[in-house]
Length: 290
Image (cartoon, rainbow, N blue to C red; front, side, top):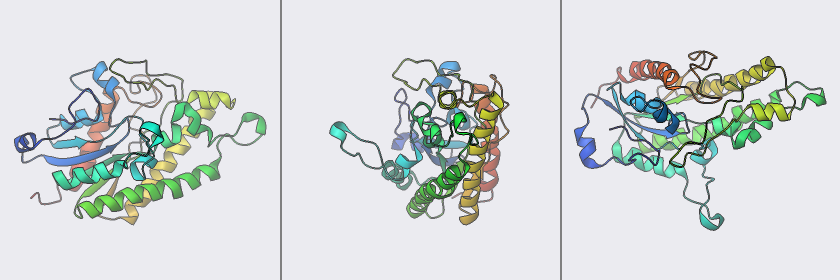
């Protein structure tokens, strides 16, 4: 059974379900954002669904998914969500660690950083942009580098250290997305309370009068490269524990592979799944399964 963070589907793994798993399948826990929790993919094709659903359908993995569409790296690592009356709720990382201790997974998957860069309908993206009238380059390169190399790196290392502490022999895989398309396409409001509509990227560029299209694509490409370089450096700093899943260039810059500005189509997710499977199995198959 694939376990998803969507409210539409059962999220918990109970003891009986765990017993029914194929003993040859690798067990994982995943945390992340909408690349791991994307309900519209099930509306597009309920038999395939999103990235993690398709990953599970390979028959090689059983994954307990804690991802939540719209979640940020900052919330996953430190806790920023609030409950009623602006009262802080427990950090998401605590839930992740509980799942790791309970299910003793072989691997951990992390999808994070996208909403820190492009959340709040593009407001976060504007932090990295100069207005065209300023005469400066569109991308605030120094600010972006500082954000990824310091803030994002530290937050991810916080998660890595906590996950290692919960299960020292676990393998950790972190991906850095592919080159998103700032073309203004949105997710239409879907039933069952899915509220991510978008667009997330084009409004930020438009507010800053950044044209033509090629300039916007250059900015997104640079930001995605910075995030992936951050993950690469974390893998080097944590050898034999952290592995980078580099998805850059897997998807074509077209409406067949991308359902909207930030999310692949079901077919696009399928391409990403093939790469995920190859990278994860190369590492796990070198281990001796208990």
